[in-house]
Length: 148
Image (cartoon, rainbow, N blue to C red):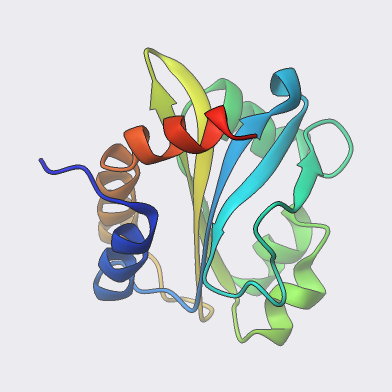
């Protein structure tokens, strides 16, 4: 299994599971925020953008992805609307489904990789492809963490 740079991960994601929007975030500020370290759409989701983990994320999402280290699938627009405060922006980009996969090192979540595509685009095979990519960007996210 070859490590990927963040741009290489984006290219891999375009092949499978498929993406319209692709972002990678690293946990920063002592674990209180997620800092975006890569974005396929920097005008809408700029690198360096931050979300607080207590106020701008769903508690269910946080427990599943950050604490539990498990992927999150939002297969349709209702899921996106339920879990993400920025759902209007997500929808405006043509996205209606999301997979979030934790990036983990030594048993700890150090970031997340975020795949977004049209509603209904993702299934269990999509999750497997997303997890494979997340497993291959650990070193790239670790390097990004050092800069945030």
